[in-house]
Amino acid sequence: MNFSRNFVSAISSKPLPPSSAAAAEPTRGDIRKMAEFICLSALLTTTMLNQKRFIEMLRQKNLYGKYKVLVGGAPATRKWADDIGAQGFAENAALAVKAAKAAMAK
Image 1 (cartoon, rainbow, N blue to C red):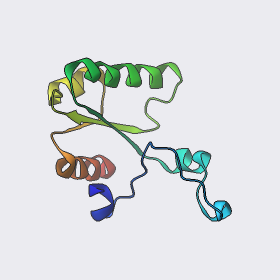
Image 2: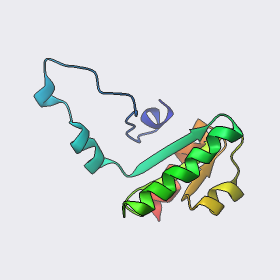
Image 3: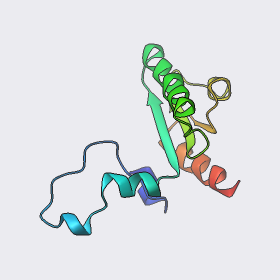
Image 4: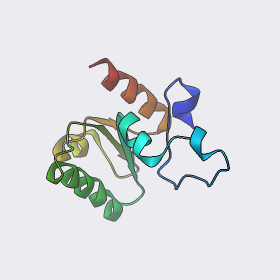
């Protein structure tokens, strides 16, 4: 929501809703081609480890570098983001927009 309000397109990881106008809507493949960022949020330190696992999976599939990965959430820190290889960190959704814009400028 914050991304959309700040002139950055956002696509939720939730499944796309069924539509009678499916031809007019982007497919999952189209979304993968359009995506520049993957934003990962963690609520607890136990779920924070999934951020690291996700980045490791990107490396294993030779996709690391194709997307800019931003991490955040209550337990995450800038040091954590640097340690796991994320390209950005934000403490909240508003700052995530700023981090995404800064990463786009690079």
